[in-house]
Image 1: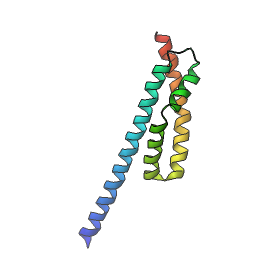
Image 2: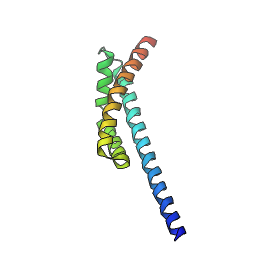
Image 3: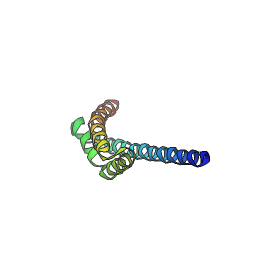
Image 4: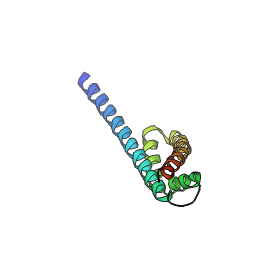
Length: 105
């Protein structure tokens, strides 16, 4: 009985760790996509905040994958809140990166 319970706990922890890894990978892909898009759009004459918003919006599939991974890990409500917050904060960070890119050139 003890071995069965131990095996069940190990499986549960293993599953949770796998879900967490999937969400981290999905979020990283989303951010990488937004970074690449911001780099491309930074060459335009649009304001930095517009460029960063366009970059975030252009990565819709990656955003959806991140939401799904987070939803499986922590639930849909948490995923909604987290993705919305991440999107707002990362838009601001991308705007700063765009300004820095433009200053270097």
